[in-house]
Length: 235
View 1 (cartoon, helix red, strand yellow):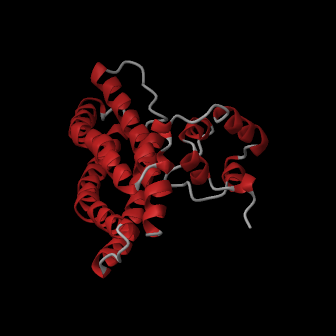
View 2 (tube, rainbow, N blue to C red):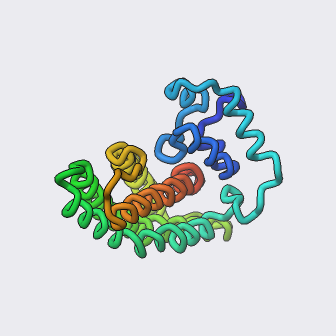
View 3 (cartoon, helix red, strand yellow):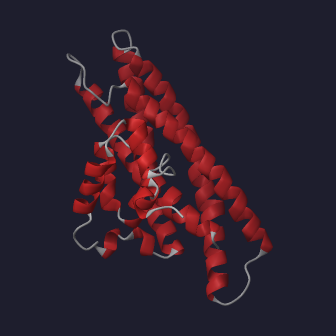
């Protein structure tokens, strides 16, 4: 049996999202890479796990506010929250971020060739996310809600819904990995969104928005990979 202190990174954050700040501080991926034990994540980063666990204990020492206790939410409510909060963010911001990325590639690409590659990668992310969100909103989430309703009513869910659920979970989990790798590539190219000297305000806004995009994606994917998807699979 896995020891308590060797839970996966994703398990820690699923139980209490306040631990995400600790993992971010040490550069440990808790969403797409959250399926590995904490000891392994520390070993990969060359980190002593003892002080990190101490910081986790300190971060979770106060009672968790119910509004942040995502693991306690029902699946239909959590799915609706993801659509309203995170899909809403993407729908409102993705196109504008792409415009900024292409603008700085056009103006600064000669001096900073990395921004040309960043614009190209972000275009791919935007295209992939559009289809990904549609799959969640039109296939996965409705199937989860129908299965959940059937279970709560004491009945058996439709076989078709169970098949949809399994296929969609596998597909979306793989897509999360690909999107996560692309976002990490942008972070690496931008040197953690460091602003070069002598660039325009648009460059600074673009990098700030790209970091905001990554931060939102981390929470979005965490809620699905570490909470929604595992609970849905148990249905």
